Length: 88
Image (cartoon, rainbow, N blue to C red; front, side):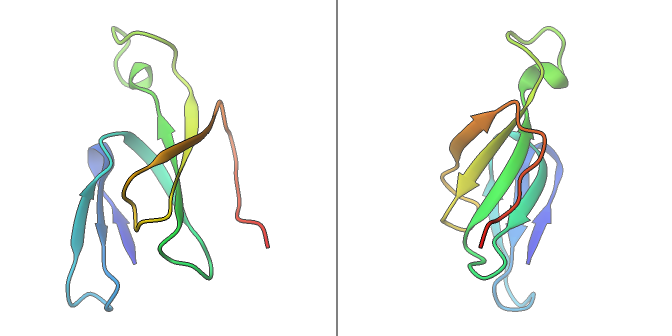
């Protein structure tokens, strides 16, 4: 089970809530998509810093990141992504 907090804070439990692991994605995570059969794999929609701070450099857009390590070590999949889903 994943819990998404503010500013990229993610709590994960793999034992039904007995213990939790804290991860800081250090990104503005909008939503998480957990793989239906491999719960260690997840995708995260993030908003660039410009979306919450108009003085930040660059543009405001949504990007899609991927992790195979229970919400750690995120890799960029693509930018300007509006929707995604897990395939078969």
